[in-house]
Length: 165
Image 1 (cartoon, helix red, strand yellow):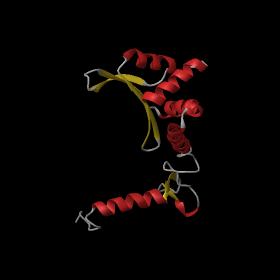
Image 2 (cartoon, rainbow, N blue to C red):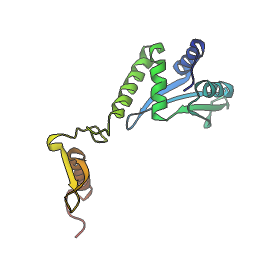
Image 3 (cartoon, one colour):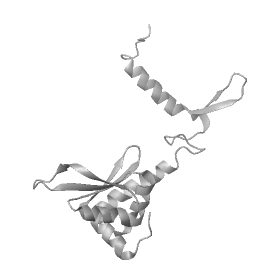
Image 4 (tube, rainbow, N blue to C red):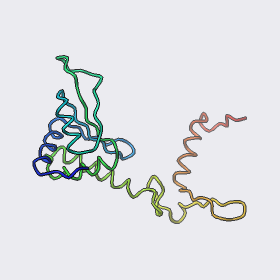
């Protein structure tokens, strides 16, 4: 993300506050979108921030004006943008941005040496170690995730009846 002056940051915050949308997509993927009928505004937003993409929307307004969209979908870019503008947002958008940032930060700790990719701890009975035939370490598994996968397969097999017979 580009370095911004206070005036540029204020303009971006005002635009996101007035025309923008802050979303939390699954799994914990922040998304910031601004839509406008002015192409130059969207281009300026892209140039100032240095992140995101622009496109022409398929839809038009009721008065048949073309809609242009700036979208930040990269998880880390959107998270850092939200952290930057958070103190300047009003109450409702601040709450949404705070929730989105906390979900993004929780995702950053997943998949580390201490947790699986879903955030379950690799400790005690939750850790299952898969070994090669010679006894050497191959892979570690999270028992919670393993059990979730088994339940999903069980449910898909017509209430547990074996469909492979």
